[in-house]
Length: 92
Image (tube, rainbow, N blue to C red; front, side, top):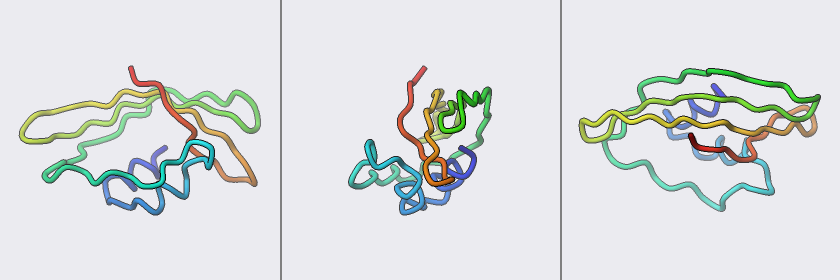
């Protein structure tokens, strides 16, 4: 989760797509709006359900046009070939 957040901050779309599970991966990612500033990540909870499935609850904060915003999500991950992939998430 932390590496994906850093990739969002740095605009590393190739990394984000490479760490997204093939069954849910979009063809491309939208460009961030001009002026978007990521302010921080708080991982609130992570649960390893078994050897190949996990969830991570997080809050990512950003600012756009002087307005603070937050993204609160529980993300689902699956491990294949020793690597974790983002599958999807539930927004709160």
